[in-house]
Image (tube, rainbow, N blue to C red):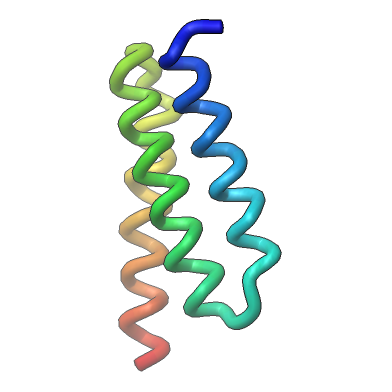
Length: 69
């Protein structure tokens, strides 16, 4: 298995774990980490749809976290 694919699997696992967290803020913070890893993965494999979507998700999560405080 290629190391780039392992990065994508790690990103998936981080996003999955984010939904096991308690509290909206914790879910969003962990999900941001997963989305950032997906951005890196998407850039490495040249997949615009992956890095674009996850970049947008990071911005949305940051906005929503800011609204929580």
